[in-house]
Image (cartoon, rainbow, N blue to C red; front, side, top):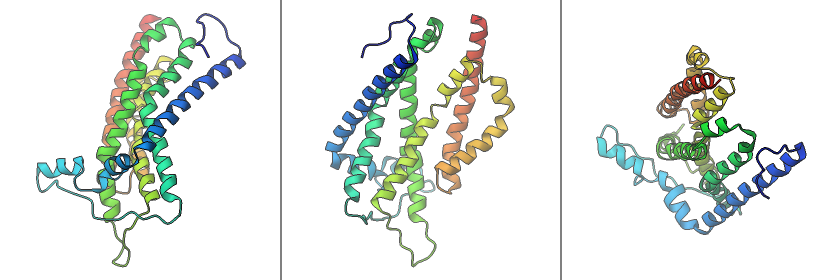
Length: 265
């Protein structure tokens, strides 16, 4: 399917057809990436998925290298499977999630290709480099969740006990579920500056509004951090602080965008 010819008006059905092909290409890229991830099963699980449960993980070595006071490591625990096909289906799930992460720059590019024909020349100029920025922010968020949130969360959850009779032996499925929750949502949260940019560009958001409701934003950020992370105050602040920094950066972005918009007008 060829790209839209700029300047030509398209019907609603034409737009749907165009959207369908963009979705097909994006899904195809994710599936191809997922197949590649699937074939490297041992490396993916031993070196990536299971890495944060070992004290040799980069984050533990970093904090232990600072001082004894900051040193921490997860307790020893085994992962078990309770269903016959659990390992196979978890393997597929991990492959799809990592396939999306690997293919995310291309997915963002397909989204941009669909949106771009509907923009004015000035808007296209202003959005130059948007795909690269979205990709970097998303990957940065996933990396932050993986290297910062996951180690603290795993250490807390795996070491938490209600009594001597209760032994932590999580299932493989639950471990992968939590690892996904600690990484993928953070990647999307890191897209906040991009969202603010577009809302400011169309006049739905202003820096004055964001400054006025800064205190409310702090409460929302803390609630969001509590939802994403386990009930560990340290981990909640670890995710809350960067989100608040992103919020402050977004205020600056909203101010510059609004100023440039009114200057252009």
